[in-house]
Image 1: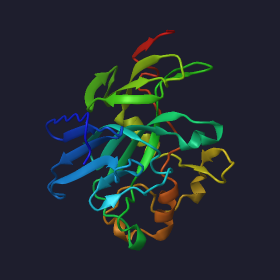
Image 2: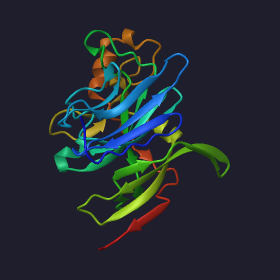
Image 3: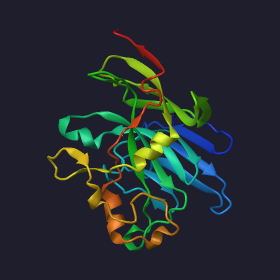
Image 4: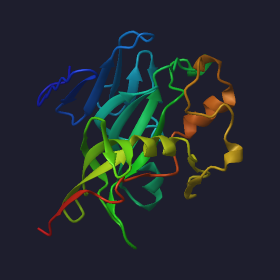
Length: 266
């Protein structure tokens, strides 16, 4: 049983419970009602007491175990449900940066509420799990990045200029070996959705750069989408999504830059 430094927060629909344990593992639980789905629990957590097997889970589905392409030492900070999807916000070690060193990137991931897993060996695996990087940075020739998300708001709908948008506000920090700083960035749900409809990212060999996947290589039905019955998806789609959960495009800050910045040279 996880112990020590436990913090529990419960909100109204959808309910979210977060806890922080002595092993520095964070998790977000999303519990919601749906007329067709009944009551179900979605969680970003770990499957073992050592904290080495992070998963996004809804019984009986989960992300791939011990697979850095899916989740690489993540810290979950928030989740919400909107439309056909459940979204998770977290920071993790960036697998696409590993050939250059170690860096933490902020992510948004989504899974489809209607996902029933795939056939055969994919029966207990998500067929809809995708993730994108969140770009919270001060623009310029050499952008200054706030790479580590710490918390995120619920979905906020409002009017901005002559259009309306649904936004999520996040608090980001710089890494400990950088200039100390923090920022607040906003991201629109539409921009998030657009990245998930864009190009996938891949590394063709262990020493190769991560590059966008040619659209001609993406099978049909499109991997990561919602389907009426995911158990009927063909093997090419399922094999592709297993190794291509990362999207190529970053989610841009809605206003083009942070809306609040604090830095220090101390």
